Image 1 (tube, rainbow, N blue to C red):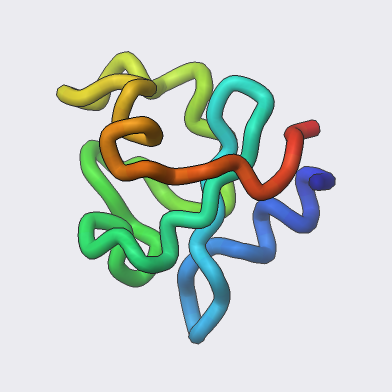
Image 2 (tube, rainbow, N blue to C red; image 1 turned 45 degrees about the vertical axis):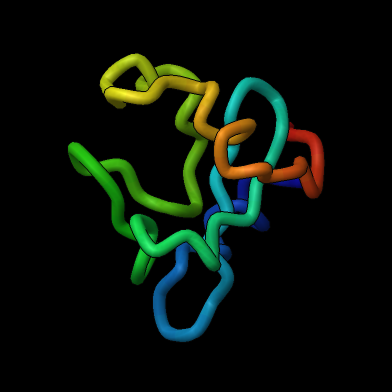
Length: 75
């Protein structure tokens, strides 16, 4: 997935909410905590969270906890 494709899926105005993490893209559209593409500490959908996932209390392991499967590679 390109950076432009990721950015377009920002969870706003009916768009899907995608996030990139460690070279993989995940669809977080159905995760309540990502409503409208916004999350904890200013994290937003449509972006690569790899460099700031450490700010999250749950860390990168949350994708496994939520049983999220990668939908694409990034970049």
